[in-house]
Image (cartoon, rainbow, N blue to C red):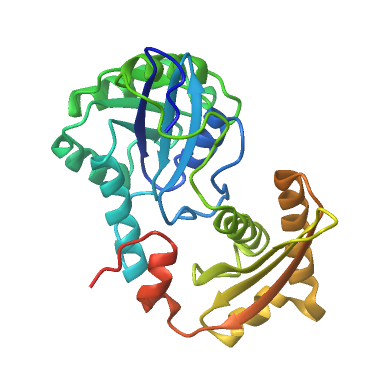
Length: 302
Protein backbone atom coordinates (compact mmCIF):
# COMPACT_ATOMS: atom_id res chain seq x y z
CA UNK A 1 0.00 0.00 0.00
CA UNK A 2 1.05 3.55 -0.69
CA UNK A 3 0.69 5.96 2.23
CA UNK A 4 3.19 8.70 1.51
CA UNK A 5 0.96 11.57 2.56
CA UNK A 6 -0.68 12.51 5.80
CA UNK A 7 -4.48 12.87 5.80
CA UNK A 8 -4.98 10.78 2.65
CA UNK A 9 -8.34 9.30 1.81
CA UNK A 10 -9.29 6.24 -0.20
CA UNK A 11 -12.29 4.12 -0.99
CA UNK A 12 -14.35 2.17 -3.48
CA UNK A 13 -17.20 3.66 -5.49
CA UNK A 14 -19.49 1.15 -7.21
CA UNK A 15 -21.16 2.33 -10.41
CA UNK A 16 -24.42 0.50 -10.99
CA UNK A 17 -27.11 0.98 -13.58
CA UNK A 18 -29.01 -0.53 -16.46
CA UNK A 19 -27.05 -1.83 -19.47
CA UNK A 20 -25.71 0.95 -21.69
CA UNK A 21 -26.31 3.71 -19.13
CA UNK A 22 -22.73 4.83 -19.79
CA UNK A 23 -20.85 3.30 -16.85
CA UNK A 24 -17.78 2.26 -18.85
CA UNK A 25 -17.62 5.63 -20.62
CA UNK A 26 -17.85 7.44 -17.27
CA UNK A 27 -15.11 5.35 -15.64
CA UNK A 28 -12.78 5.96 -18.56
CA UNK A 29 -13.56 9.69 -18.36
CA UNK A 30 -12.95 9.91 -14.59
CA UNK A 31 -9.75 7.85 -14.71
CA UNK A 32 -8.46 9.73 -17.74
CA UNK A 33 -7.57 6.54 -19.58
CA UNK A 34 -9.30 3.55 -21.07
CA UNK A 35 -9.76 0.81 -18.49
CA UNK A 36 -13.19 -0.50 -19.48
CA UNK A 37 -14.49 -1.48 -22.90
CA UNK A 38 -17.15 0.68 -24.50
CA UNK A 39 -19.49 -0.52 -27.25
CA UNK A 40 -23.01 0.22 -28.42
CA UNK A 41 -23.94 -3.38 -27.60
CA UNK A 42 -25.44 -3.74 -24.14
CA UNK A 43 -23.99 -5.95 -21.39
CA UNK A 44 -20.42 -5.83 -22.74
CA UNK A 45 -18.94 -5.39 -19.26
CA UNK A 46 -19.04 -8.90 -17.79
CA UNK A 47 -16.89 -8.80 -14.71
CA UNK A 48 -15.95 -6.17 -12.16
CA UNK A 49 -13.35 -3.77 -13.53
CA UNK A 50 -11.68 -1.27 -11.25
CA UNK A 51 -10.48 2.09 -12.52
CA UNK A 52 -8.26 4.11 -10.19
CA UNK A 53 -7.81 7.87 -10.02
CA UNK A 54 -6.42 10.37 -7.51
CA UNK A 55 -8.13 13.66 -6.70
CA UNK A 56 -7.04 16.04 -3.94
CA UNK A 57 -5.06 13.40 -2.02
CA UNK A 58 -7.95 10.94 -2.29
CA UNK A 59 -7.52 7.69 -4.19
CA UNK A 60 -10.88 6.82 -5.71
CA UNK A 61 -11.31 3.25 -6.91
CA UNK A 62 -14.24 3.07 -9.32
CA UNK A 63 -15.87 -0.32 -9.70
CA UNK A 64 -17.44 -0.73 -13.15
CA UNK A 65 -20.06 -3.41 -12.62
CA UNK A 66 -21.95 -5.29 -15.34
CA UNK A 67 -25.26 -3.66 -16.22
CA UNK A 68 -28.14 -4.90 -14.08
CA UNK A 69 -30.95 -6.43 -16.14
CA UNK A 70 -33.41 -9.32 -16.02
CA UNK A 71 -31.21 -12.39 -16.46
CA UNK A 72 -32.20 -15.11 -18.90
CA UNK A 73 -29.07 -17.25 -19.20
CA UNK A 74 -26.48 -18.61 -16.78
CA UNK A 75 -23.96 -15.95 -17.86
CA UNK A 76 -26.61 -13.25 -17.33
CA UNK A 77 -27.29 -14.48 -13.78
CA UNK A 78 -23.57 -14.45 -12.96
CA UNK A 79 -23.20 -10.89 -14.27
CA UNK A 80 -26.16 -9.55 -12.26
CA UNK A 81 -24.99 -11.31 -9.07
CA UNK A 82 -21.53 -9.79 -9.60
CA UNK A 83 -22.99 -6.31 -10.07
CA UNK A 84 -24.94 -6.39 -6.80
CA UNK A 85 -21.96 -7.93 -5.02
CA UNK A 86 -19.80 -5.03 -6.20
CA UNK A 87 -22.33 -2.57 -4.78
CA UNK A 88 -22.46 -4.26 -1.40
CA UNK A 89 -18.66 -4.29 -1.07
CA UNK A 90 -18.16 -0.59 -1.89
CA UNK A 91 -17.87 2.46 0.39
CA UNK A 92 -20.33 4.40 -1.74
CA UNK A 93 -22.81 3.42 -4.45
CA UNK A 94 -23.47 5.60 -7.49
CA UNK A 95 -26.58 4.89 -9.56
CA UNK A 96 -26.05 6.00 -13.15
CA UNK A 97 -29.17 6.78 -15.18
CA UNK A 98 -29.36 7.53 -18.88
CA UNK A 99 -31.39 10.75 -18.61
CA UNK A 100 -32.46 10.48 -22.24
CA UNK A 101 -34.01 7.04 -21.69
CA UNK A 102 -35.38 7.76 -18.22
CA UNK A 103 -36.74 4.98 -16.02
CA UNK A 104 -37.06 1.74 -17.97
CA UNK A 105 -37.82 -1.77 -16.71
CA UNK A 106 -34.17 -2.49 -15.82
CA UNK A 107 -33.85 0.76 -13.85
CA UNK A 108 -37.16 0.08 -12.13
CA UNK A 109 -35.82 -3.27 -10.88
CA UNK A 110 -32.70 -1.53 -9.53
CA UNK A 111 -34.76 1.13 -7.73
CA UNK A 112 -36.78 -1.57 -5.98
CA UNK A 113 -33.67 -3.30 -4.64
CA UNK A 114 -31.46 -0.26 -3.99
CA UNK A 115 -32.95 0.65 -0.57
CA UNK A 116 -31.63 -2.72 0.72
CA UNK A 117 -28.05 -1.52 0.08
CA UNK A 118 -26.81 0.06 3.34
CA UNK A 119 -24.01 2.17 1.82
CA UNK A 120 -24.48 5.89 1.08
CA UNK A 121 -25.91 6.37 -2.40
CA UNK A 122 -25.63 9.15 -4.96
CA UNK A 123 -27.54 9.68 -8.19
CA UNK A 124 -25.80 10.51 -11.47
CA UNK A 125 -27.89 11.57 -14.45
CA UNK A 126 -25.93 11.01 -17.66
CA UNK A 127 -26.36 12.46 -21.18
CA UNK A 128 -27.96 15.59 -19.71
CA UNK A 129 -26.92 17.59 -22.78
CA UNK A 130 -29.62 15.75 -24.72
CA UNK A 131 -32.53 16.47 -22.35
CA UNK A 132 -34.50 19.65 -21.59
CA UNK A 133 -33.75 21.12 -18.16
CA UNK A 134 -37.34 20.89 -16.89
CA UNK A 135 -37.44 17.21 -17.82
CA UNK A 136 -34.12 16.64 -16.02
CA UNK A 137 -35.36 18.29 -12.85
CA UNK A 138 -38.59 16.25 -12.95
CA UNK A 139 -36.62 13.01 -13.41
CA UNK A 140 -34.24 13.89 -10.55
CA UNK A 141 -37.18 14.68 -8.24
CA UNK A 142 -38.93 11.42 -9.16
CA UNK A 143 -35.81 9.35 -8.45
CA UNK A 144 -35.07 11.12 -5.17
CA UNK A 145 -38.58 10.32 -3.98
CA UNK A 146 -37.86 6.63 -4.52
CA UNK A 147 -34.40 6.40 -2.92
CA UNK A 148 -32.63 8.53 -0.28
CA UNK A 149 -29.71 9.79 -2.37
CA UNK A 150 -27.07 11.93 -0.66
CA UNK A 151 -26.52 14.05 -3.76
CA UNK A 152 -27.59 14.29 -7.40
CA UNK A 153 -25.13 15.03 -10.20
CA UNK A 154 -25.92 15.93 -13.80
CA UNK A 155 -23.14 15.03 -16.22
CA UNK A 156 -22.11 14.02 -19.70
CA UNK A 157 -19.77 11.05 -19.43
CA UNK A 158 -18.80 11.50 -23.07
CA UNK A 159 -17.68 15.14 -22.86
CA UNK A 160 -16.70 15.20 -19.17
CA UNK A 161 -19.19 17.96 -18.39
CA UNK A 162 -19.99 17.93 -14.65
CA UNK A 163 -17.42 15.23 -13.90
CA UNK A 164 -15.15 17.65 -11.99
CA UNK A 165 -17.90 18.35 -9.45
CA UNK A 166 -18.51 14.63 -9.09
CA UNK A 167 -14.82 13.92 -8.44
CA UNK A 168 -14.63 16.77 -5.91
CA UNK A 169 -17.57 15.37 -3.97
CA UNK A 170 -16.19 11.81 -3.94
CA UNK A 171 -12.77 13.04 -2.78
CA UNK A 172 -14.43 14.48 0.33
CA UNK A 173 -16.97 11.71 0.88
CA UNK A 174 -14.59 8.74 1.03
CA UNK A 175 -13.03 7.78 4.39
CA UNK A 176 -9.57 8.78 5.59
CA UNK A 177 -6.96 6.10 5.15
CA UNK A 178 -3.94 4.96 3.12
CA UNK A 179 -4.14 4.37 -0.61
CA UNK A 180 -4.82 0.85 -1.85
CA UNK A 181 -2.74 1.06 -5.02
CA UNK A 182 0.48 2.73 -6.22
CA UNK A 183 0.02 6.34 -7.34
CA UNK A 184 0.48 5.67 -11.07
CA UNK A 185 -1.78 2.60 -11.30
CA UNK A 186 -5.04 3.14 -13.21
CA UNK A 187 -6.58 -0.34 -13.09
CA UNK A 188 -6.32 -3.60 -11.18
CA UNK A 189 -6.82 -5.68 -14.32
CA UNK A 190 -3.74 -7.70 -15.28
CA UNK A 191 -2.37 -6.58 -18.66
CA UNK A 192 -3.17 -9.96 -20.22
CA UNK A 193 -6.81 -9.60 -19.26
CA UNK A 194 -6.99 -5.94 -20.29
CA UNK A 195 -5.55 -6.91 -23.69
CA UNK A 196 -8.22 -9.61 -24.05
CA UNK A 197 -10.92 -7.05 -23.18
CA UNK A 198 -9.62 -4.69 -25.86
CA UNK A 199 -9.82 -7.40 -28.51
CA UNK A 200 -13.32 -8.37 -27.32
CA UNK A 201 -14.39 -4.75 -27.71
CA UNK A 202 -13.14 -4.68 -31.31
CA UNK A 203 -15.08 -7.86 -32.07
CA UNK A 204 -18.28 -6.30 -30.74
CA UNK A 205 -17.71 -3.02 -32.58
CA UNK A 206 -17.24 -4.76 -35.92
CA UNK A 207 -19.73 -7.61 -35.62
CA UNK A 208 -22.35 -6.36 -33.16
CA UNK A 209 -25.25 -6.97 -35.56
CA UNK A 210 -24.14 -10.45 -36.60
CA UNK A 211 -22.59 -12.00 -33.52
CA UNK A 212 -24.35 -13.00 -30.29
CA UNK A 213 -22.78 -12.68 -26.86
CA UNK A 214 -21.23 -16.14 -27.12
CA UNK A 215 -17.71 -14.76 -27.57
CA UNK A 216 -14.86 -14.97 -25.10
CA UNK A 217 -11.24 -13.89 -25.57
CA UNK A 218 -8.25 -15.28 -23.68
CA UNK A 219 -4.64 -14.11 -23.87
CA UNK A 220 -2.70 -17.38 -24.07
CA UNK A 221 0.81 -16.03 -24.61
CA UNK A 222 2.56 -12.78 -23.71
CA UNK A 223 6.21 -12.47 -24.65
CA UNK A 224 8.28 -9.32 -24.15
CA UNK A 225 11.06 -9.47 -26.73
CA UNK A 226 14.62 -8.17 -26.65
CA UNK A 227 13.86 -5.44 -29.21
CA UNK A 228 11.21 -3.98 -26.84
CA UNK A 229 8.24 -5.30 -28.79
CA UNK A 230 5.56 -7.58 -27.34
CA UNK A 231 4.21 -10.75 -28.95
CA UNK A 232 0.64 -11.50 -27.88
CA UNK A 233 -1.32 -14.59 -28.84
CA UNK A 234 -5.06 -14.64 -28.15
CA UNK A 235 -7.80 -17.17 -28.70
CA UNK A 236 -11.33 -16.05 -29.54
CA UNK A 237 -13.78 -18.70 -28.35
CA UNK A 238 -17.21 -19.08 -29.94
CA UNK A 239 -19.85 -21.74 -29.41
CA UNK A 240 -20.62 -22.80 -33.00
CA UNK A 241 -18.91 -23.18 -36.39
CA UNK A 242 -21.32 -20.62 -37.87
CA UNK A 243 -20.04 -18.05 -35.34
CA UNK A 244 -16.44 -18.90 -36.22
CA UNK A 245 -17.17 -18.08 -39.87
CA UNK A 246 -18.62 -14.70 -38.84
CA UNK A 247 -15.52 -13.81 -36.82
CA UNK A 248 -13.16 -14.88 -39.61
CA UNK A 249 -15.18 -13.15 -42.34
CA UNK A 250 -14.87 -13.64 -46.09
CA UNK A 251 -11.30 -14.74 -46.82
CA UNK A 252 -10.31 -13.70 -43.28
CA UNK A 253 -11.27 -10.03 -43.78
CA UNK A 254 -13.03 -9.60 -40.41
CA UNK A 255 -10.34 -11.20 -38.26
CA UNK A 256 -7.67 -9.11 -40.01
CA UNK A 257 -9.60 -5.88 -39.41
CA UNK A 258 -10.24 -6.79 -35.76
CA UNK A 259 -6.56 -7.64 -35.28
CA UNK A 260 -5.40 -4.38 -36.85
CA UNK A 261 -7.48 -2.05 -34.63
CA UNK A 262 -6.76 -4.13 -31.51
CA UNK A 263 -3.03 -4.08 -32.29
CA UNK A 264 -3.05 -0.30 -32.74
CA UNK A 265 -4.77 0.26 -29.40
CA UNK A 266 -2.53 -2.22 -27.58
CA UNK A 267 0.58 -0.57 -29.04
CA UNK A 268 -0.60 2.83 -27.80
CA UNK A 269 -1.45 1.43 -24.37
CA UNK A 270 1.86 -0.42 -23.95
CA UNK A 271 3.93 2.24 -25.73
CA UNK A 272 5.62 -0.56 -27.63
CA UNK A 273 5.31 -2.35 -30.95
CA UNK A 274 2.83 -5.21 -30.63
CA UNK A 275 2.74 -8.40 -32.69
CA UNK A 276 -0.81 -9.69 -32.21
CA UNK A 277 -1.89 -13.14 -33.35
CA UNK A 278 -5.56 -14.07 -33.15
CA UNK A 279 -6.97 -17.60 -33.37
CA UNK A 280 -10.63 -18.56 -33.44
CA UNK A 281 -11.73 -21.81 -31.80
CA UNK A 282 -15.11 -23.43 -31.28
CA UNK A 283 -15.77 -24.43 -27.69
CA UNK A 284 -19.34 -25.60 -27.40
CA UNK A 285 -21.22 -24.30 -24.36
CA UNK A 286 -18.21 -22.40 -23.00
CA UNK A 287 -20.77 -20.28 -21.13
CA UNK A 288 -21.58 -23.35 -19.01
CA UNK A 289 -17.91 -23.95 -18.09
CA UNK A 290 -17.03 -22.90 -14.48
CA UNK A 291 -13.38 -22.32 -15.50
CA UNK A 292 -14.37 -19.56 -17.95
CA UNK A 293 -16.33 -17.82 -15.20
CA UNK A 294 -13.34 -17.89 -12.86
CA UNK A 295 -11.18 -16.28 -15.56
CA UNK A 296 -13.77 -13.51 -15.98
CA UNK A 297 -13.94 -12.92 -12.22
CA UNK A 298 -17.52 -14.17 -12.04
CA UNK A 299 -19.08 -16.59 -9.59
CA UNK A 300 -20.43 -19.67 -11.39
CA UNK A 301 -24.18 -19.86 -10.71
CA UNK A 302 -25.53 -23.32 -9.99
